[in-house]
Length: 332
Image (cartoon, rainbow, N blue to C red; front, side, top):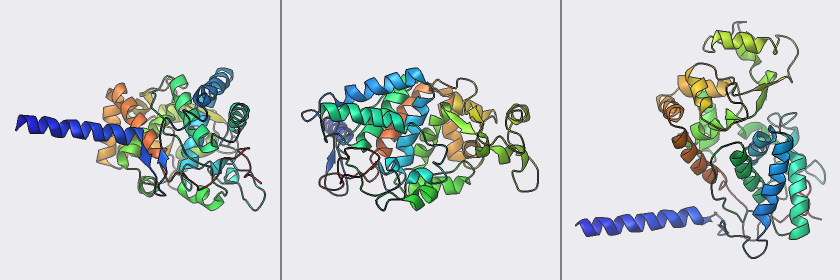
């Protein structure tokens, strides 16, 4: 009986390992960490080199590149549609509300693509570049690493409406945010873990102003926000004006990827409403916030798993899509 149980456990472990190393998409293609092993073995090194230099120049870029991957995957899957500029019948997602004057780092992606094209012309997709840059940015900020599954291809279209409707907003209700995750195949654990990316990066005043002055539309602030912290925010985020002023989402360690984000939530010092509701609207999310606040390694482990899962949202593989020469435009 013991031998049988051991054999079952070994089979289970082997199956899990295969699942992590290869992921099949709905169109029959495969994602694999070794996808470019022969066609462009230096691809990951090139991406890492450019990202490292970019983050050294501007530490904030780590959060920006991580966010690009997130905003791309939530709109028609991880297909680099976010990178397309308006033109040739395409309305860019860059002008949608969640991205306009907010999504940034596109020039770094251009630098990466240019370097990769010189080494391996029309081989590495922009979608894979986003996935690799997100991982490398996280590591450079002190966060966890993970094996990136590769083999995505780039879309030939964008979805302006999808960007407006599918990307979770900082003022959404908890149920709306959860629905945004579940409709792309992510669950409540992924929601909490991936929200932890707010441990780095900045938010604009307009993203949380209503919490300071008019949370319920009655001219009253959000009293679930620590009022001493709220007073600090008001000094740079006035009732009128200052909408584009930037604030570190994690005031404790703004440039370090760690679990202080979750500690801030428990102390009622989460800047965004979408973060604070993780502790006030659902028992399961509150429990996860408490676990991650107490155990940084547990947070890192789940964040890495959830990033792999997010990176596998509806990828274009096989003969679908294309490998763009320029990430900003479809091939002609």
